Amino acid sequence: MMLATAEHHGVVSTTLTTFISLLAFATVIGVFAKFIKVPYTIALVFAGLLVAVLGAAPGGVVITQELILVLLLPPLLFQAGLHLDIELLQKKAVPVLILAIPGVLVSMVFVAFAVRPFLGDHAWLSALLFGAMLAPTDPISVMATLKTANAPNRLKTLIEGESLFNDGTGVVLFLILLAAVFPTGDHESSLSIVDGVMQFVKVAGMGIVLGLGFGLIAFWILRRLNDHVLENAITIVLAWGSFIVAEQTGASGVIAVVVAGLIIGNYGTKLAMSKQTVQTINTFWESVDFLINSIVFLLIGFELQDIGGVEVLFKGNVLLAVGATFLAIMLARALMVYPTALTIGKQWPKGWKHVVFWSGLKGSIPLALVLGLPPGELKQTLVPIAFGVVLVSLLLQGLTVGPLIRKTGVANAS
Image 1 (spheres, rainbow, N blue to C red):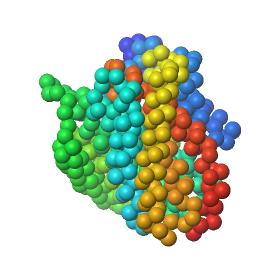
Image 2 (cartoon, rainbow, N blue to C red):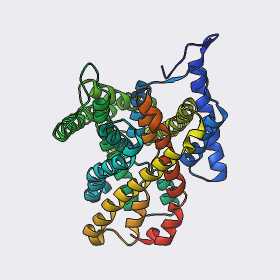
Image 3 (cartoon, helix red, strand yellow):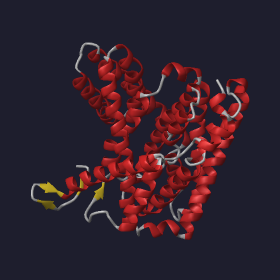
């Protein structure tokens, strides 16, 4: 079930009523965002706050770890892989990999140092867990602005590619640290650097293999069909199926989903699908992406209500933690983006480095991950800090990236 409750109203349970209400509210927010011409992710931040302020979360609703990690993560990652151009990505592979692997590690460590003083008795592993949680970036707001400004495709591919791969890297690190912080059985939480690296290589490697396998099988089937409804259904099964099978076999479901999405988006849509099928799939997954993003922000409102309402965001220690964390994220990003731009040299036209630096917005995936934490003191501590960082990021960076693009003139750079 999506949301666990015990109440029923006739044949319609509170769970189903809540789910439909979330979808309806999300749609209203999307329409409102169009009218006032702001990115819908920014509108959703305020929607989540509104839920907490009004106390709109129904009683008895339980946000389960399985809901977040299995139901909500795969479609977000699959849709991102589906729309990324591999040919353009190859030309930007070096900066993408630098920002997606060393960049994620540096950001994770910086955030851990920043947030550790606010975690009380919790160990460094919990701080690193929070750092991994905030590593993924959300390019939705930036990409809409880049498209409006007619920015070059190479810049858009760089930003999208970095986001996709640091999503994968960050989520895999999060899941490894999650198992260490909340171990099953009688084992104490411990994780050495060597163990962590070996585990990362193992689960990521297996995830790549399974993602390739499932993606190629789906591609083979799609080439033999000419039914846009059935072909769309295959992509749905691929997104969740590759994640579930990979996780059950000890591989990274996150990496498997990303790789499968890349294969379908770059080869399936060009070599195995009709124009009608491509249009159907793109429309479907864009709608799913909107709904999942919306649900995540609204569920954060539920969680804020449960831990004391929106007032918890204005507590002194929360404000200090948000400020320290955001500054740590920006410092880590500057240390990765500007030296990378300096070494690559002429490959980045003037102004690109500033846009890339400022485009590392935080969005739905960090919120989904913090919602996926087991109930307890650590989750209650981290939820308002994570939401505060996302709020600052989307408002400060999301609303100023447009003027930055115009000032730097990246639209005129080839």
